Every structure is written in C-alpha cells, then in structure tokens.
Image (tube, rainbow, N blue to C red; front, side):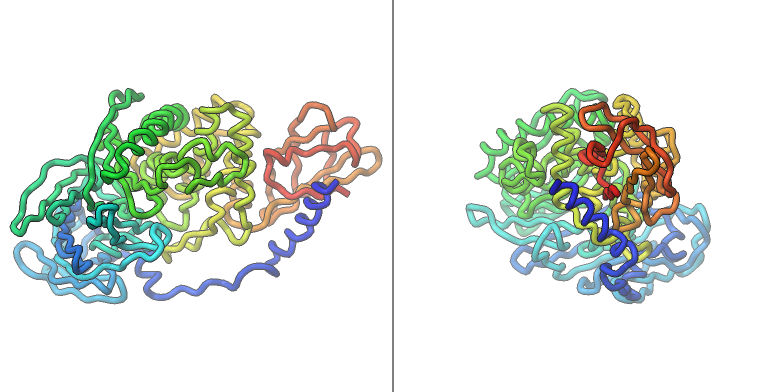
Length: 550
C-alpha cells in the first residue's frame, strides 16, 4: 500500500514538472560557448586526418610548451579557418610552408588566415606553436585540466583529464567531437626519472638535453580529442594478453611502484572478465591495433582511449561503495568496468555533439548491468539496474542544448540505462537484443554519430519507438500509466510530454503471468481478464514509469 501511495504521489507531481512549474531557469549561453560548440564554415572547411602533438612538461613551473601539427583535407575552398586553444595559453606562432601566418583570437578560438585560397580536396598542413601554464583541475575528472601531485615517494605525478571542458584546455586542436583524426602521434617530454604513458603504442623514446626523455606514442585509430592523455610519473610496467574475438589483444598496465602488487591482483580479477562480457554483448574490442592499457591516475578515472585512467584505489565498487545499494555493485571494480565500457560507447562510437553524450553514458552505464549478468546471472543484472534508480533526479532533459558544448542532465547515466533495459525487456528476445548492440558497434565502427542515427538503428526492435526515446531523452518528467476500471473493463492510457508515446508495458493480476499491453494516449481497454483495482500489478521493477490507478 505504501508503494502504491508513493507512485500515486509521484504521478501527481509529474504534470508540474512537465509544465515547467518546477523546472530550473533557462540557461544562458555566451559567444564563447557558440565558438566552442558550433560547427561554422571556419571549422567545417577542413577535415583533420592526422595530428602530431609534441609537448614538453615543466613540472616545477606547472607549464607546458610545444606544438601541434594539423594535417587536413579541405572540404571546400577557403582562406581562413578556426582552431581552438584556451586563452590562458599563448599561441607563439602558426607556421605554414615555412612562413608565419597571421592569426587573431576571440575567447578560446584562434582564427588563421592563409596567403592564398586552399582548394577543395587539397591536402595540406600547418603547425601551431604554443606555451603557458595550463588550467589546473581542482576536482578532476569532473572539471578539466592538469593534475599536479606526488606519489608516495614524493616524485611528481601528473595527468590530464578534460572531458566536457574540451581538449583545447591544454593543446591546440579543432575542439569538436565531430572531427576525429584518423591517426595521431603523441610526443611527451617527461622530466628526468619519469615516464609518460599516452594513448596507442609506444614507438620509441629519445633522450633529450637536460635529462628529460621524449616518449612517442602512436594512435592508429580515430580518436576523439578529449581522450588524448598525458600521464607522467614513476610508472612500473607489467603486461598480459587476452585471446579475444579478433585474436591476441595486448594488455599493458602502468602503475606506481607502491601499487604494483595491488594492481596485479585487481586488474587480474576484473579486466579479462570485462573483456569477455563486453565482446559477447558489443562485439570485438574496438582497438586491437592500439592495445588495451590501464594507467594509474591521480584522479578517479577517465575513458582515455587505449589508455584508460584508473584511480579507484584498488578496491571494488565506486570508491568502495555500491552505487546500486543492492550488494551487486561492490563485487567488482566500478572504474575498470565503466571506463572500459566506454571503449565501445564513447571511443568507438562517439557523439558528434556533446549534447548527445547520452550515447556514451547511457550505454556504458547499461554495460555495467550486463557485466553483473555475466558474473551472477540475469536477475542480478536486473536488480543492479533497478537499484541505480536511486541516483536519478528527473531534473532536466538528458539531451543538452546543441551547438554550445553543453551536456544534458546527469540522468544520462542511470535513467538512460534503465531506458535501454526497458527496450530489452519489451523485446523479450535476448539474442536479438545482443545482435542489435553488436550491429550498432559494427555499423558505426570508429565513427561519430547523432541521436537520430542511433534511434534509426533501434527501429530493428520492430516497433516505432522514437516517441519513447524522445520522452526519456528530451523531457525531464516520467511518463505516467493511468489505469481506470469502468463497466467491467480495464482501461489504460499514457500521459506524457510526447503525444505519441507508445511504450508497451507488462501487467498481470497478482500471482499470474505478465502479459504485454500496448497503451496509447487515450483510454482504451487492455486485455487483462479478472483485473481489479486490488489485484492489478504493473511491472515497475523493469519499467521506470509513473503509475496512477483510479
């Protein structure tokens, strides 16, 4: 009875949320937001194919200096383009064919003018030289920038994390998720006695004057800008291999000396089971050619492609806690599983606009339940997902505003995950569901996507469920299933922001078998013989909805 009362009260509040009475004031955006988030002709005129980022780290001064080579193909004729670099970092010069180019700055955008038109289809390049003290992150990875700290021996330990704020917080780039280079060389010069670990494979090291060493890491796959990582410390290395769907995958682990024994145990217990589960559900690990790495980080963690940052202190759960409060989430290391899940969703499949970050976070949070299922069975995975509803706020839409580099609600994690699970439950065919997930990773292998493309793929469920996606992604309020009993009939309808909302839902009489019914936005009979107000049960364990029974 208490549960029924709570759901009714929740349903009564939903119209207030939907009508905006409880919504936050509309967010204002600046010219700087548009420069960073919008694809203007000054950004779409060139397609980046390759970067060579070459950076020297000065730990004592908390400073960096270096260059980035942009190798591109012109998509149209142009004489002027935009790249991005935060204003606190100085552009020393822009070099093109041996001569310096004029440039101008506005906020964190830099505009370069070429001496003659670059013709559509031409392949060309320029190099940006820069220096300065980059932004220091106070709460990485939730804010962006550098982390400067020390290990247990007092040696420097430095890392970057810049998801959301953008890679241009520390290196010059076309800072938009829609344009990934096909490959990249990352050269980081680390102080004497320290190593750098970045994305991809180590091509070589070079001793430099003054005792520093340059580490050259090559990424042979497309990579989104925020994944590019610098990790400098007194790292120790150990390795393993995994026999996966595409052959032998190298596993490389770079950790601080004091963590070596703990890392061997924790990584050994989590990594191979994770790869087995995710390859089963999503298809082959997407970066066999670049390998899989975990790197000790002075922050909680980040999905840096082929160099996942790890900072969960070698314990199970999320910093020792179970986010689901079910008991299932403290049996494995959250950061290893979640951040590695992003190799499929976020790194393999990347949203073109950060407003669509639900594509990264909803699928990856959902992947946690599939990992739980792989270890403890399907019911455990479902319980884990249900438990994570406790984190949902229903505060604002999951999809953010486009063109201003802004994410939507943090509900993209847990609310997005339960949305995906509802689709699986409704399909009631786990093999077909697995096929849909694997085909999604194959169709958009190493590509950037939009919400519309992902929704089009899920038409393979056999029903037009776009209004369902839109309700959960573009509106804060939950849909409410209203039930009433009239003239010996059970009538049902959906009340939702999306007028064509049509989620099939499971209902039963107490003690009976669930059957799927198909309510629409008008009261209509549902086929449930013997149902009464007292014995009607709606599958709210698997369906995240409001319920109002009259």
